[in-house]
Length: 165
Image 1: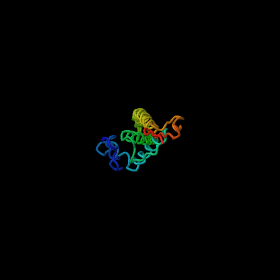
Image 2 (image 1 turned 90 degrees about the vertical axis):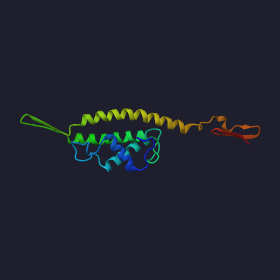
Image 3 (image 1 turned 45 degrees about the horizontal axis):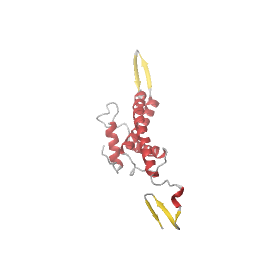
Image 4 (image 1 turned 90 degrees about the horizontal axis):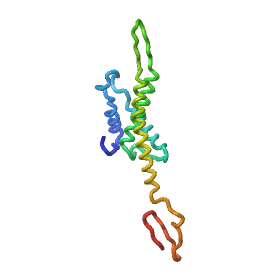
C-alpha cells in the first residue's frame, strides 16, 4: 500500500478489497463480492470513530487520518467483525441419511483472523496515540517560573521562543 493515504474513498475502498481479496474471481462460494461498498464505507467510518475515541480523544477524518496502515487494519477488523456476525447468525448444521451439511460455519475462522488483526492493530494504535499525545504536549508544559518578572520586565516563554520585555 502506498505510504500516503488516498484522499478519495473509492480508491481506499479498493485497497481494502485488494487486501482481503474480496473480488468475484476469489470468492468461489459467494456470487460476487462478500461486502458491499456501503458496508465497507461503514467499516471505514467505524474504524475512524474507534481510533478517535481511544484516549487521547482526537477528531481525525478520512482526509487527515494519521496512518494509512491503521485505517486499513481498523477497517479490515470491522469488515471481519461484520462478516463473522453474519456467519454466526446464518449457521445451520443438518444431517439426513448419514450425510451432514454445514452452512455458514466459518465463525471460528473469522474470529481467528479477527484476533490476529486486532492484536497487531492494538499495538500500533497505542504507539501512534502515544506519539500524538507527546507531540501535542511538546513545549506546552511550563513551570511556575514561566511568567516571572526579571529586572522590572516580564519574561515570556512561548515554547522554544523566550524573550524579556
